[in-house]
Length: 182
Image: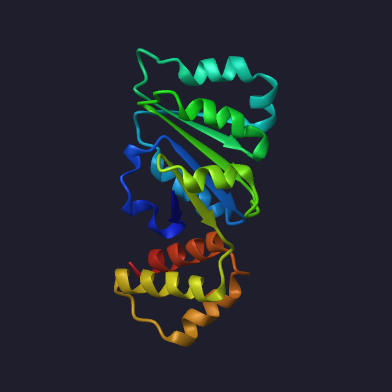
C-alpha cells in the first residue's frame, strides 16, 4: 500500500509488519522510523549484505520470540531487489510483535521490491523525496504558528535560504529560535 510520507502518522501502524522507506531524505526517514519505536521495543539493525550472507541465522532471529522483550523492530539498511524473496518469506509468516523496516535509496518504478510493497495491502510503502524550499518554508511557517511566535515572511525566507535545503538544519535553527524566545 502506498502512503505519502507525511501521512504515515494517519494510519494504524500496529496493523502492519512490513514497511519500505525509500528516497534521498534520510533525516525524514530516520524521524519516521523513530516514531515506530516505543520504549518496549528492541531495535535490531542489519545491512542487506549481512542478511543475504547469513540469511538462515537472521531469519531465525527475526522469527524467534523473547520472553523478556515484547516487541521487535528490525531495520534493514541499503535494501534492494535482492531482498524480495526474503521479504515474501517473512510476509507469509505471523509476525505479531515484530515490525520490519526496509530502508533504501531511490528505487525505480520498475523495482520488484517497490512494486511488491505498493501492491500488497499488508505492507506500507512510503517515498521520502528531497525537501524543496517550498516544503521547508511550510515547515517553518507551521512551527512559528504552533509556537505563537510572530515573524515576518522575509525573516522566514532568510532562515530557509540559510540552511542549504536541509530539513535537519532547519529543525536545528527553529529549536534555537524557540530556545531564545522563552
